[in-house]
Length: 233
Image 1 (cartoon, one colour):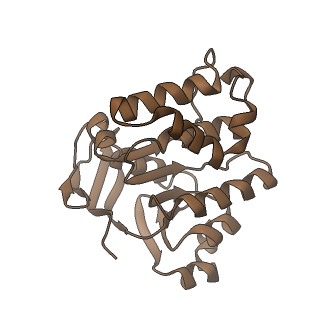
Image 2: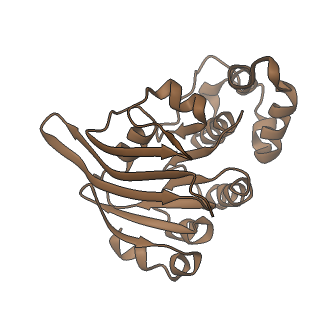
């Protein structure tokens, strides 16, 4: 299987403080997990891939395109969508208005905006229930569904999710897992997550990050399902 993303010897520092050290990861399957304890550098890694931080060394390839150091807007245009941990929304807008703005921004005149919005609500039926609700009234889970739905509009080549199930009820976490498995057949994903059952259920490759370094890798679905990575969390 060809690699969607290849990160080679990636390093990053905040001033004199080194945060990432010679990171090497590849993702070409369904869902690649990035795991580790708090402060391991997981979010910084995603932000660097997404162009929100500029690497101090190494290379990032999206397919055959070198995206190292490109600004975030260019990386987004090339097909990487990043959903951060903080579930950002515009509180004065409704769910539907969020979807409409995002779909228009990503599809422009070239796509069927309403059809894409309907597809997003098919993936997350709860969004149809709350489509006329202001985002200020949405739960954390509903906001996360909304953010993921918006990220999937357009020609997304890779979706990166930073702890999407943090703080969610177990039932909603299971729902997320089912959606991620289904959608990953269309769009490869990088998933930063702490929920071991979810990781075992959806990932076909896992990297363990500790103090800015990759210390362990599980390269197949069989390895992931054995759950050896859990001892590092």
